[in-house]
Length: 503
Image (cartoon, one colour):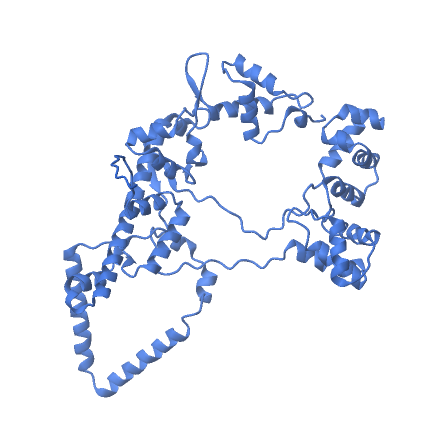
């Protein structure tokens, strides 16, 4: 049986323009530049350039018409031979431009490398920016394969060595099960290489440059490096004994137990430990193939006459406008256009206008959020670390009358360059922790205090989390031990046992 019911409910829906604005708002500056490039390619009605006033546009069109008419008149007055000569030169230039349009660099530009002139422009000049070519580089695995001819291997051994090298991870370790790798090699090449023979190939690979490459664990890696050391001192021999016979105690930094197991003095243990600490735990690092990632700030905060000046990083963000020719076509030549053409131009016109508006709204919102952050954290911007105040997204949202989700989109992934360094905007937001004086202090400041205490501790007897909690309570901070542990772990500081050192 069908029944009709009536319900009342509230729904919140976002228009396509609002969705586009929110997506653009959360983009950092580099992604925004790429987004603008993509939009320029997809929308023919969108182009780079400043919006002109109507009188400026009319004057510009009039000047172009006059100039073109003068050129035609002067050219028409020339003799036929002269006109043919001009036409021939034009065809030659057009052909030269067409044939050489694929050249990516001119040698003069390459050697001059006039970066200062390019950096002085606030906006794009309409031409593609040329990136300097990356230097040729050789990967870690290619370097290892180049050294195989030094090992005097048989054909079968060299094939296995290649297989081993291409299974080495970026940190320089062979995490693949070695027994499984040998079995796969035998099946693939229909040979019967024994495990001991394969171990010998691996052992020889581990002793090429860098020493320890292809090790299956840290212990094996350090032992190989110790064997390769040229000196034969007593400390080196003791270090090898520690790695072979007291590895578990070394992992837990139970130095007293190592002394008892190996019957060595504390001074000799310290010398051996210094040798072990000086070894490379990750021989695969330093490959240098991946390009370095740099933080590009979205804001530049400077101080002028005691006031803070906010500048948005828009060096690569060009001004945008709607194409004049298409706009006139849609406004003044509608009768000549087909129905589909008019609809296409109308859709692209609306998309271009909304995109330009979204860029402007993004700029205004980011400026408002950054201004409020500076106002709330003024002491930090004036004096630096140690003066951060408690601040949450809700405080900024109420101040500028926006939703908390909007503040989150502005803050996440954005960076500000200040006189104290480059900081992510999330750095300025943290919860407050009450003190004995009744005030609140930012948890970021508590973290810096914990780090300061740990940096000044006795390396032979580091503070436990309980002792750190007691010290903080003496300073007026009422924090639970688990909170101290959470803050310590967030700063990648190990537990007290792992911080123990021999001095």
